[in-house]
Length: 195
Image (tube, rainbow, N blue to C red):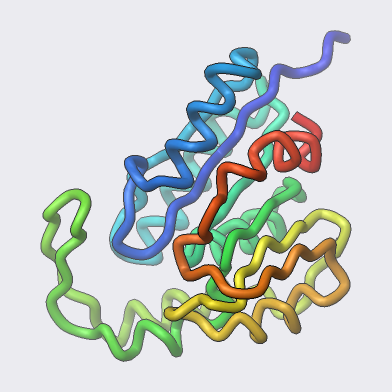
């Protein structure tokens, strides 16, 4: 039986989009160096329940025909951890959110996605939906690679270092939430994901 062709599923963060810098870096790297990899970067739904359903739909559409690897940034890292718990896909987490239901509690009310101009309302029930996606215990630490910059101004980097302590980690001084100089990593990411 021939091996399945590779698929990279990139999951962006809160109020982000497929046009975000890291998503573009991964897409461009694959186009230039690994055109055999199908790159899927969905515009994630604003609400956690819809986002999780969207990801499950995508996996169900592709899982039989492709070998899937995940890259998740910020809130996308949290969702990648949840997807791993369901399907066992390897995941690279870039400055991932560990307890987004605490972080985003400060953002309740009207939101506007700066990439898409979509307006929506964040409510307490959405924090509950996020909490329901939490993975308390990682089944296989070897499935994860944490890419973390200590200068992240949005998230406390120590939460991710602790949560993923048994996993492969690259923790850099400085940087910020966007992960400065992410361009250094696509080749290693593809290798780690075995795509």
